[in-house]
Image 1 (cartoon, rainbow, N blue to C red):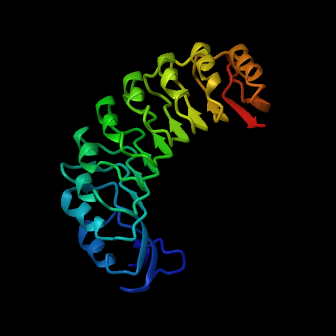
Image 2 (cartoon, rainbow, N blue to C red):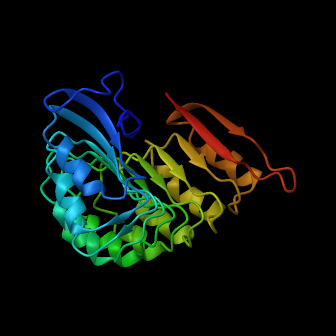
Length: 260
């Protein structure tokens, strides 16, 4: 039993005790185990993947009212599963990395105001699913890297003013998405690696004063483009560092800007 817990010193305590986290990724019937832990005094995090996550399992997870972090990495999320989590007021982080689900599932979930982190990287999420995130008003960290998301999907994020960290690496986005990104007032960390993003798009981000880190490995931004971007930001930033140039063409990997 202890091997199933990530309890931070509380492993082995029974119902009514405090358990930091549970890992049920290798359990054959995880819903039966989740039901047992729902009675514990504190379970802050749970991992149930990779697994087949159906409404029964998700419903059991939803009964852990103290849950703040849920991971279903690599899982097949079936119809109605995410909807079973709807209304969970404490859930702050949902990890669906490499998960598969229908676009409509995010609509059934309707991310709550408390959700701060959502990782959809390397999943089958599409542009259509992103329109379901418009009510996630406290979402600060959104991972969309290695998905089929395009500029149209990014456009659906324009209302998420709380976004601070956005991963778009290895997607089909282009310079066009910069028109939306520059409207995100709290965007600090942006990953555009391995995309068609170029110096033209980078120049569009000059008005994004909160931005202090851009990852550009494999993008179409030259060292000259990055240098110009840094120079034009001097009114709002006192220092900058272009690091980790690629050996073959000198393109920058990361542009970091230190705020004044």
